[in-house]
Amino acid sequence: MSTGTASLPILDSEALAPAVSKRRLPLLDQLLADQGDMSAVERFSQLHDDATTPLLEPIYRSLLPATAPGPGQQYAFEVNLDACSGCKACVTACHSLNGLDESETWRAVGVLHGGDITQPFQQTVTTACHHCLEPACMKGCPVGAYEKNPETGIVRHLDDQCIGCQYCMFTCAYDVPQYNPKKGIVRKCDMCSDRLAEGEAPACVQACPTHAISIKLVDVNEARAVASEGSLVPGAPSSSISVPTTRYVGTRVMPANTLPADFHAVRPAHIHTPLVWMLVLTQLSVGAFWVGSIFEGVLSAEALAAVRPWHGLLALSLGLLALGASTAHLGRPQYAFRAMLGVRTSWLSREILTFGAFAGAAVTYAAALFQADRASVWSALPQLPVWSEAALPVLAPAVALTGASGVYCSVMLYHATRRRWWHGYATGFKFALTSVVLGLAFSSAAAIVVLASTHTDPLPLLRPWLRFAAPALAVVTCVKLLGELSVIRHRRDPGGDLGRSARLLLGELRGLLGLRAGLALFGGVVLPLVFFGAPEGVPLGALVTVALSSASLLLAGELVERVLFFAAMSAPRMPGVVS
Ligand code: SF4
Ligand code: SF4
Image (cartoon, rainbow, N blue to C red; front, side):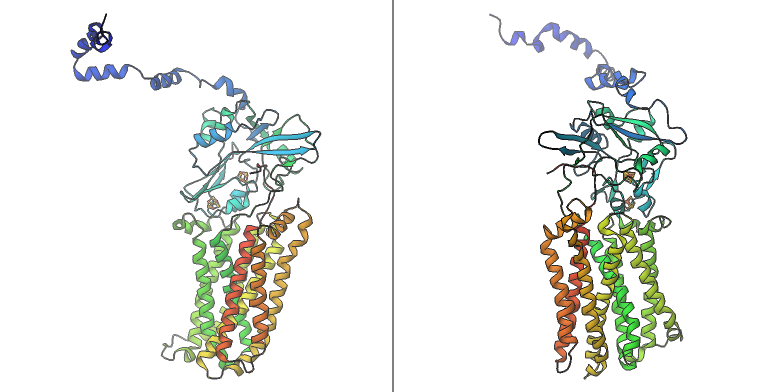
């Protein structure tokens, strides 16, 4: 019987022989010889190195155009809907080849539903960037972080240039750009342009087991004509927004009632907290400066001299705070200085420019007010060259005008996204009346606090202002609230964009809507009318408390209104799935 150890190769003299001969080699040669003994990875790599063309080329060659785009042409995705099984191999290949983070997806697969119980219809739809002819992402970007290649038509995102403002996520109707919080920038599909340049297929094209995705050359004029006719698939955004080039082809006839599976599934959108603060505070600051001009006509000279500088300082501080809050929305605030680059096409660049001018004018105006009224503020304030008094009539309209231009740019920034809930009329109405409501409330509070602290009996000085401001505040608050609530009349149109917003407001967001209405009514109607309108016999302390409470409640109400402005936004989108 042989022993177990005798059969082990390590003790076998024949097996030992080569090792003995190897030992005779110098160490370096031995290591080189070992290296020459190829591993599986090396053999795999060798296989590809030796091939004159990529090994999978015969498979994907038919999925790529034979030539580069000619004049009037560009590359585009074509999806054969008959072949798409919804397996998501394209999604995973894109994810892995582009090294995406867990939360990022540059390609997605959704579902269309239609038909009836006797003849149901279902179609899976793979979707990515549509490399549009008029890329809305590119137009909106304030720093020029998108480029459309003039030869291939591919729309690329320039990661290094991006400041992470996320505005392109609003302007692209297809939810294509994705924000990566770790990197502080957005990123998106570039049709694997590096691979295409080498004659290789994009990851999704190569990975699809049924060859449902291919790259085609499209005629630009033809794509424009097709885009004017509707949308890429039922329920998708109108193709007229950015003229997408992807083509969905198939032989199955879709029933007339075909819609994305998640068409009726409304969910609150992202809130963008820094933007909520920035919008409300800039509008408050602008409104306070507007109301400052009304002071001139209503307050007596004595009251004006006491109130004006502090009121100007308050309005300025809130404006500067708002501009500071806006940088919290940037993924890379250190590059915010680039935001002027897109001023020719981007409303965000224009908004930053006009609010920059507003801040400059407001600082100068506030300084001039302190100089002009230094006797009532602090008589020890040194007398600067006498420019302040003379400059006031120019500075006041300059501040009002640049502020109004800034608010207009804010309105256009949302209007340009072509989302109905953010249409210019509705948004302009909200933003302008936020300025008026908060301007009146904060200016009134400032006047009451300043006069209460500088005069023993300020009521005679305040009365003319309160008689004007209290009813004005109540009326404007009611008009604004009614305007906001008017969207509810669309609730019976569940398929329309405004119908979905109305359903959200009456459903998941109804608690916030109730809070918003309560804050506006109490802070803007009850308190001003009960106390401001009837100051006779009201203790001064109570008047101050009520003025500050009214302003605070109204500010809270406007912040909630702005949260709803973002959260209730619902627009057509490419098909998704019901989760
Ligand atoms: S689909 Fe969106 S991200 Fe892609 S090019 Fe069009 S607008 Fe830009
Ligand atoms: S800078 Fe803003 S708009 Fe431009 S790509 Fe980056 S996130 Fe999008």
